[in-house]
Length: 134
Image (cartoon, rainbow, N blue to C red; front, side):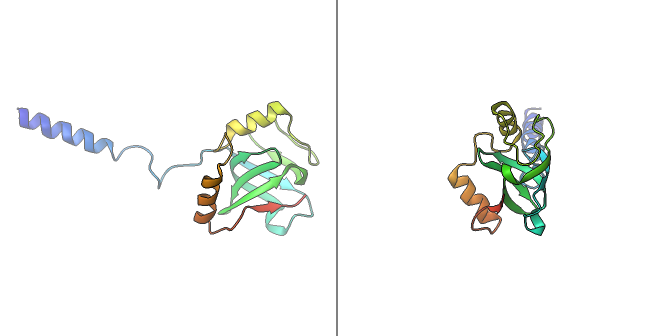
């Protein structure tokens, strides 16, 4: 009986290692956003849709189409950011309350540390963040 209990315990422990999220099926940590930018923005960035990585003082960092993109607040015409309370019109900056909510909804609520940003850019084969001009 003791042998069967050990086999059962081992099966339960090893089975637990296969259940739950892993690197392959781990979904976005930040809320999904859809941003409409100024007409001066280059074609691929007139509409930015993707995961909100960070909300910074100067703009939003979004993972969109396999690229890390910084969209400056001045470039925003419209934004769909669920649960944020931030609905910009014509480059409007978020107030402090909205910025705090945006940060909490992003993957990196504390901001993207330089080492993490470097690793992210390497994994995306980018030298720097793409920036949507104002």
